[in-house]
Length: 253
Image (tube, rainbow, N blue to C red; front, side, top):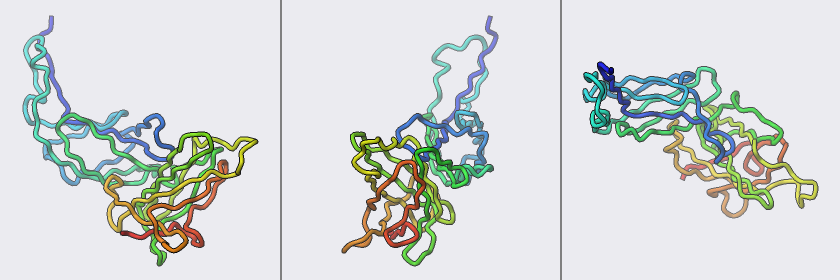
């Protein structure tokens, strides 16, 4: 016999993802218990419950979110109540320094779930047999551009393009692992793969989801373009920079 039923509904859920390196592979969840989350804007009754799979957002209103019902609850009483959307802004940090800090802003309350991307720091990035890229993002005068988001699209012969992503830190420095990049075959026509780099960056802000496209310094009659063509040598660790420069030089449109 069931004497009472405890009914608890979360308002929403945040999944923290390791979005560094090769894209399109299996989703890599970062355990919420390993992170420090500071809310800058949120309802007063909001409570964060951290789990390995993510962070549950719990509220006390409306009252139907948390109820104790006599006996066995019928299916109708288990349906989550309607909630108005509520904005949340905050920042997340990794105390161990494996991931870069970031700001975030979401509208919660519909139990749709949110996936927020985290990007590995130089300290948290490891290079394997496929090699990787290091470098820094800067303006033409050498001023570092922090928190820039780099997307590298590599096209191996006879294979689909592979995209890799990394973010620069507060000093503009980055490390990009090329894990999952296929090795050169013995009969390969060249010792490199063609690739293109695009960058998203802004003068202010650490929310990678809101960064606008930036221009990258190249060569030729138009020195700044939306992307930079580069050659990638699998198995090597190389510096990614604009031609003739010691940094990946950016310009804000």
